[in-house]
Length: 267
Image (cartoon, rainbow, N blue to C red; front, side, top):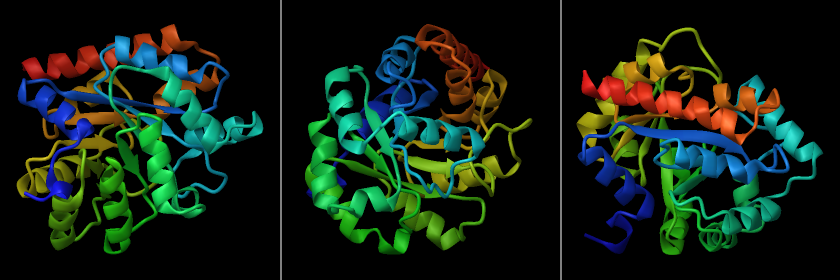
């Protein structure tokens, strides 16, 4: 096993919890969306999150739906910057792994090596960059691994079977299964395509497979846990943040998602 194939902090943490019988929960917060945004990290951890996805706001997102776009625009209007976000994360000490989600422009602006080193210094374990395709990820994957950062790759319902195998094998931390074709956002029902994506990814790797996009309620989380190792939940939580609900209130929603996953695991 090469150095780049060893499990990092994020994957080790998620594997241990999954292998103990736990369905994984990764809630999301946009950095800088409020003055006290790092308090949501602690609220999520206290409510049973296994890791937290932190979105670095970007002016021209590709995959974010209206809610996450609004959160990013609000953060930018409040003066959020990448450096400030990472400085705040370094001080936050949430107690669970953090994975940053952002876009290639931010990663490569000053060089991927500099960016990944900054993530490591901030205590971040994982990186999600949806607009870097699998075919062009070699350099970033190597640089991230050298910095101790696990590069999480995404697979969609439209991904060809051969590429699903490649993504499952090359992703680190976990594999992010996108449940629908489209942007992030709340949806009335868990898409039928979610099961197919999760099943295919799990066939190709023992790495944790988490489903995201359109998972908003405890019931949907429980349903998703029937075919995947866990879920990423973003838009429904950020809708609450944008409406003025504080860390304790949104943390209660994360606790409800935790209860839904635990109930699903018990059935």
